[in-house]
Amino acid sequence: MLRLSKKMLFAIEAVVDIAYHAGSQPVQSRDITRRQGIPRRYLEQALQQLVRANLLTGVRGPRGGYNLARERRRISVGDIVHVMRNMEQSTDALEEEAGSELTQTVIRPLWQEIQTDMMARLNEISIDHLCQQAQANGVVSEGRQSLDFTI
Image (cartoon, rainbow, N blue to C red; front, side, top):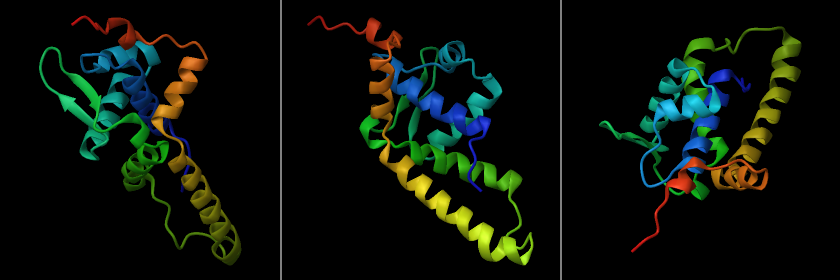
């Protein structure tokens, strides 16, 4: 069942933060926590899942952190939701047989249709689009300030 959980919201925020604030160095989780107010324990779980799903790459070491695994225009919100949904389904899966005949024949199919439509829409929205919205709304990018273009 698709719902916007805290973990899912945190994962989307983290990926957008990495894409938006990326500079010449990987984005560190402590910086994401500082900017977004995401509890570190939730953030690390989400980031590790996103690395395993090849949406992010992890860089080890004192200057380590996270980068996008591909261009931000090639990562959709749906990609992130899919990863987090799979992670959450293992912990709060609802039995498919649960519910009355009305639930099984009318309500559950309706909910499935709505979820399919929502996932189709989320798959159309790229991380690049959200970064453009952030810029249009005046969100200052810390990564862009640290870029050095001298040759």
